[in-house]
Amino acid sequence: MTKVSVIIPNYNHARFLEKRIHTVLQQTYQDFEVICLDDASTDASNYMISKFSNNQRFQTIYNNINSGSPFKQWEKGLQIAKGEYIWIAESDDYADLRFLEKLVPLLDQNPNIGLVYSQSLGVDENDHVMRNWKTWTDDLDSDRWSNDFINNGSDECQKYLIFKNTIPNASAVLMRRSVLEKTGKIDTQMRLAGDWLLWAKMLTISDIAFVAEPLNNFRTHTNVVRNTSKPYLELEERLQVVRYISQQIDIPHNFWEIVFNPSIGWWIRMIFRGEIPLSRSHKIYQLLKNIDPNINYRLFTIFFKTLKSKLSL
Image (cartoon, rainbow, N blue to C red; front, side, top):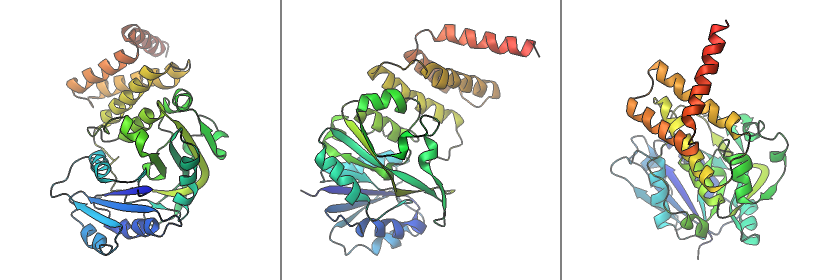
C-alpha cells in the first residue's frame, strides 16, 4: 500500500501550481502518490498540470463544471486515494521538502494520533514571508505553540479548538485515513469552515500532534475561496462547528465570554445593518439555541446592557 496520498485540489492557481507540485514531488520522503484535481479552471492550470503527466505517481482528474466548493474536491480526492495517510496540499501553498519526513514518523509511532500538523509561515503572492502563524494562536496561549506536542483530542477541542480554528491551513496537516473514514464524509456544503469541522470530528475520536518547525507555506492572495461577499456565512459556519464540539465535550467556563456572547453581538449588528437575509438570521438563531437553550434570556440581558450603556452616554 502507498503510504501517503497527496491530494492537490486546484482552481485557477496556474501561477502557483508548478512550485506546489515540485515541492511535493521533491519531498525527501518518497512513498506517496499524487492526485491533482482541477475544478474547471479558466486560466493556464491545465497547461501547468500537463507538465507532470509523465510522472507515474501523478494522476489528474478534471471537472467539466466547477463544483463550487473546495471541500467537494477534497471528498472526491479521498474516494480515489489509496494511501494510509492523507495530505491535502492546497494548490496555492507550498511545502518544505522535509514536510513528510518530519510528520510521517509521528503517525507511524503513535497509532492513537489521527492528525499531525506543522507550524506555517504566511507568504504573499511573490513568496515573501509576512508572518509566522504562531501569532494566530498567541491569544490562546503564547507559549504552547513554541514547542512540539502531542495531546488528547478531546482536551484539544475543549481548551483550544472550540475557541477558533487553531489549524488554519489544511496544507500543514497529515491525516490518518482510518480515522478520517470514521468521521463520515466531509461536509461539502460548507465554504469556509469545512476544515475546522473536520479537525473537530477527528479529534473527538483520536489524538493530535504538532511540529513547531514551520514546514508549510500558507499563501495569502486576492484569488482565495475564503473571500466572500456574505458576511453572515462566516458566523453561520463558525456556529455549526462550535455546536458540534459543544455536543461532544463539556463547554469550558470562559467559552461564553470569549466566543458565544461576541457571536450574538456579531449577529445582532448584521441584522441592524441589513447584512443578513431573514432565513439565514433564523438559522443562526437556531444554531445559537442549540448551543444554549437559554438564548432568549441571554439576548434580553445583552440588549438591556447595550441599552443601558447608550442611555448613560
